[in-house]
Length: 584
Image 1 (cartoon, rainbow, N blue to C red):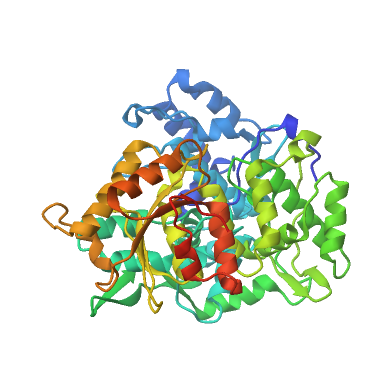
Image 2 (image 1 turned 180 degrees about the horizontal axis):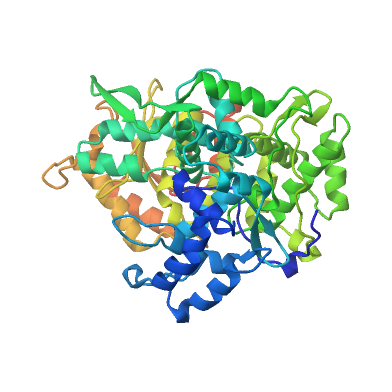
């Protein structure tokens, strides 16, 4: 294992791939590192001289490619981006070797990074921390030199894919014969409960598609609405499909809207093939001698920027503890080992991390006496971190505290703590909040979103006095003070619901409420609230005659937990709407 200090390296993200899916292009990327390949020679003598200008590194790239042994720096491989994009020049080696779409002769730096990650994830190239360089492996040489489209090439690709734990995880999830969409898989792939591994609630999406009457909007939802883990699932499913290990088959859902059955189709859905089952058994192995070694690395244990060094290190040491244990190892023993590394964690966090290690595709068995790793893994590097890098952010502290309090609802919902402070994930935040209200609190309702609609609506059925809620969610990094403009917007939604005049708003969003509902509330949901938000709540209520409230993600999660435990009712929730912050 390479010994490195975090202060001496560049922190990168490996192991998770969203975009590349062309095996022919992947092979060209690997052949860049094989100085005997025709691709390598053509790159040096033809492609780089014609695509890359001298000011962008042309001569230096050719010189670096001529060295033996060949090690290429990440920055030289990937290059940089340009703004605006249409002014981009080719300034990276992998940019040059991969042809772009629409006749473009090269790809951008983001796509180049994706291909490097892919080649690294499958074990065709390896990484040297000290120099921030990549070099070819023996498996990479085998792949580079295999005849195109031959059985030998396919066998190499299958062996490589079986060494990649997330691919094994996807096969395992499909192994019972289930027909799963990318959302089904994404929900159970990776370290759920954090911003780097998000999955759109499929039931919320299907309902939104069913009530959508605009084809363009529906197509946009299908193509753009997914979380990061859903993207990983889609990409891995595509690779496995090309190798014959799964079949890609659209999945249909029937949804009743106003008494009419509508069919919603999700294109990215998969079923395992007999060959996929056979290869899964091979990946698992019945003993150490037969197992395919799984490739893991520190960088794949967290992807989000905040706390990633701390979280990666914590999970890496948990996995090392599992690997080094000759038999079962208890949670208390793992906690003790973490403490010796300067990492003070509670048992619930360790349990969640082990679940995450299982969800990235590692075979870990659990019993009443402890845990046991049943996989063989590579000897991966854990960078040595300084004491100050073992200090958690306030977000990670809150999640750690909530883990000890949430004993009934899934800890997957803890990702709300992260995404509630990320404005770029506002839509996902909307949908996750609605998912929690509908699936955990037991409300009926729909995610709406879009132009001139609230983010969602909720309503009860079967109470002595049913009620509805108009919901607005806001993902803000530094707390939400409820600006006047957003307060006015909520007031407009309330008035539209009261008046129900389609001339004023032709989309008639209020029709999702049952006609029997005549008691309404309004609600704002955010990470936390600050400033004069209570004054705005009071103003909306005075102007409309309707009571409202604001709730932080922390208390939203606690409320769902208490409801599931049976110590909070939906009547109790209704009584909390008093134009102030709702707390449980």
